[in-house]
Amino acid sequence: MPMSSRRTGLRTRAAVFAAASLAAAGLGVGTAAPASADVHRGVAGCFAWSWGDGNTSVTVYWSNRCNNKRKLNIKYSLGWTTKSYTAVVGANGKGHKKFQTASIVSIADGGRA
Image: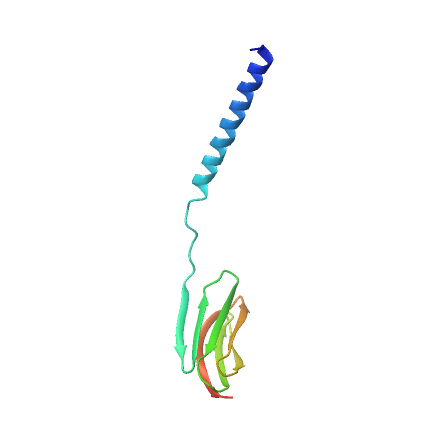
C-alpha cells in the first residue's frame, strides 16, 4: 500500500472518530428534560377550558358544551391590574385567546348571549 493512501486512510478514520465523539457528547447534553409548564383544566357551567403556564404569554382554549350561544368571562392579571375579556361562543363552539404577559385569575360562564 502506498504511503499517501495509508495517511489518507488514517486521517479519514480519525475524522470519523472525532465526529462520532462530538455527536455522542452532544447527545448527552440534550438529554435533560425540559421544564414542564403546568396545564390547568376545568369546567365552568357550559364551558370546558384549559391553559398552560407560558413564559411570555398564556393562551386559553375553550369549548361550549351546550346547545345555545353563551358568554365566557375571563379575568386576567397584568401584575398591577386586573382586566376582563368576554367571548360570545356559539352552540357547541370552540375558541382560544392569547394573553401577553398575563396570568389567568378566573374563568366563568356568563350565561346565555
